[in-house]
Amino acid sequence: MNRLLLEVAVHEAGHSVIARVVGLRSGRATLSDHDGVVVFGGPMGANDDAEWIRREIDWLETPLEEEKPLLGICLGAQMLAAKLGARVFGYEDKRSEIGYFPIEPNAAADSLCSEPFPRCVYQWHSDGFDVPKAGELLATGGVDFPNQAFRYGRRAVALQFHPEVTYHMMCRWTHRGAERLTRPGAQGRPQHLGGWFQHDGRVAAWLEAFLAVWLEGRCGEPGRASRDRPPKKTLPKIPAKRQFAAE
Image 1: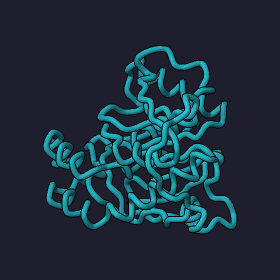
Image 2: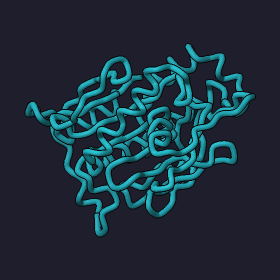
Image 3: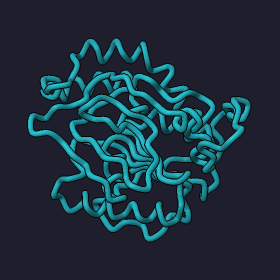
């Protein structure tokens, strides 16, 4: 998974990014030297029988117990839902959301940061999730995949969609994963590429604003205004303890 957009935004918030693959080895006993965790997507599923999938889902207990900022994207969102006891599901006909689709954020979603929650987002998935009992729904979608985002407390957020996607990522995915574009619910390649130019500016602006407050545990604070958004700055020399784990 290309993490470029998210990595730049995290750097601008004063953090460095450390890539980890938790599921392939024993998980870290503590995140005391990390400020947060992002769990990205992939072609596998949260319901797969692979042992490393189960290990990674179990490991999510670490950031949850330590109340570290935790962001699940696509598969990462499904893993977080599973960890919190919710159903992760798919369809026998492999119906999917692949391409740009409209979603409907609620007031809680729009209050997360100074930028409005995206209204049209890039999707690449054939599984969906129910909202955990202790979770708060943030955005809804179509009939097949009604739950598009939720949060758990102030620090854990799950996004079914891909705010981190770049144009180059999209070109690669639609080429290497062309077979998936034939699934029910998948859009054609021209709709993907054209949609990026139409929608990505708003999504990228939201992602930058969201990450800044999410890392500080300030998502949805009352009285937050656009002036609270931290100014952009050149990449600093990051102290050793200000690190950010990307799974």
